[in-house]
Amino acid sequence: MQKKEYEDDVLGGHPFHSRFILGSGKFSLSLIQTVMEYGGSEIATIALRRANADSKENILDFLPKNITLLPNTSGARNAEEAIRIARLSRELGCGDFVKVEIIHETNRATRQLAKEGFIVLPYMYPDLVAARKLEDAGAAAIMPLGAPIGSNQGLRTKDFIRILIDEMKLPIIVDAGIGAPSQACEAMEMGA
Image 1: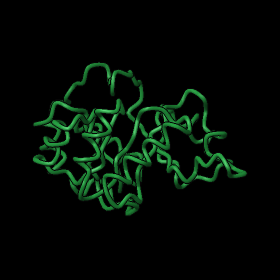
Image 2: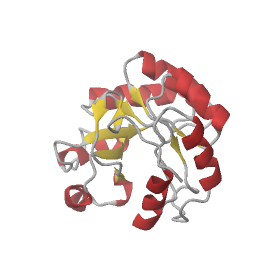
Image 3: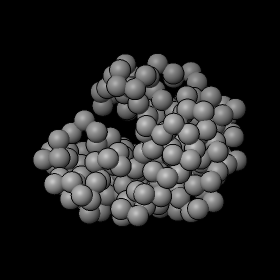
Image 4: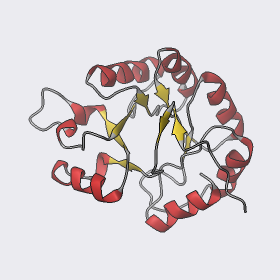
């Protein structure tokens, strides 16, 4: 298989040297900076509830300053809630990137947030029709799940991801279910 090349690994006009995006949810705040530095990640997903300015411990105080933050809208029940979470994360200083995580209104939230200047990376099941709609809505990349969230099963949706890689112009960032570095390498070898 031939690896699909992207123009300098650019997302939303920002160049990145690493394709490794670290999910910060499983790490204690005391370990997060070390994990980020040694892992070589340039992007970290965060949940807004961990970036609470009124809390004693704020994840933003523990992340390296050169990290691009990718707040997620996990827990949003509809597009309005996802949009509100994205706006709040921007106000807290998390920047313009946002990982949209809502099941039924992802397209609607992606379209609105892209209009507002967010760099939207929607999480989705690896479906070509849905991916094309998200591209039309203004997504900067799409984030199909590799396996059920938290399952550490590796690439269970490999055939569907292959279709996305072959058919889409947007970068494909495999998200969720990957449990070992070798499984992340497998996704990268596919061109994701």
